[in-house]
Length: 223
Length: 223
Image (cartoon, helix red, strand yellow):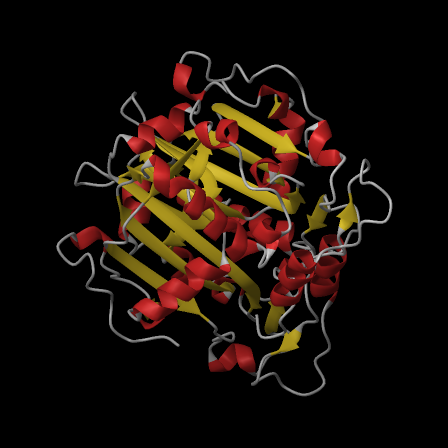
């Protein structure tokens, strides 16, 4: 799953080519796509108007209100950085110094452009279907008011780097010979709880297939 | 838990005062502290040297190698933005437009300073104890080489804003009267799996109290 080469995707910018922990670098684009498919939370950074930066949590498919100042700022196309992080466990070493994490993370650089109006319904449906397969056919289509209030931004993936670690503790021989425990505490971040019906749900409406499809996918033991 | 007023902590900077979804704004500093205590993953944004920005996933107590370029850049004290996001569920509405998330998130602005050498061991121990109560007494102290290789940055919390949503779907009456299901799919993000012993763990070393303490805390059903 990992490669020993550093990503060269942003090789013109020295500071973002992986210089440390190269054994964690991933250069396979399919791995990046998988990480993005598996996560819908991203953190987007961009410059603010005070010489600083701001980092906003958002869905990987960036969509939001046309009334949002940050959405409008992002739509203007400044350089942005979109980061996705998937923690899967804590690596507990015998020496505290060697404690670490199991993770996949990717840092993507680019800029956003606003989707043209005719493309918005399809993009939002794609997002819903990605999260909850079959949901779009269970609900009414979006109406004109809803579409007018929604802005969808797309960011072509240009330069990126990705790191992953599925390690075990790497203690020195002296520590391995000692008395301290070492191992990994896995996160069950993919586990979703039982669906809770809304307080105003009409009686007799069962949990739909899309919700079952979603929870089943996220319960996969290989994640 | 939520307040109807927007945070005024950064009121001098219009764009980061909450202008939308003010009902989600949190102004209670204790709530912010709780969010930071409960999460150890943060995303830090800062300017890069190309006129853009970069967003790096990191621990809330920012520590890393003295050889890390981004750590050195952060230590120089540029304006940074540290964002912590805790998703707790997906709000599934009858109308796709009303789909939303249950979350707590905070955006903190400030800058880092590097901890003086004598303060480093205590800070790292605090971090370990926060994550795994009792762990520091189960392992050997950090040695001089390990401490020399570690940089710890602190960021005094100056201006910040926080949002939280523990909502249910808010569909229009026409949609509530329809046939679509609505509710919340909770994330069990706090659930930790059973500890996995390291492949090179010597026989007869049981899972220690610190690991039990950690998994017990994160299994709390109120999260």
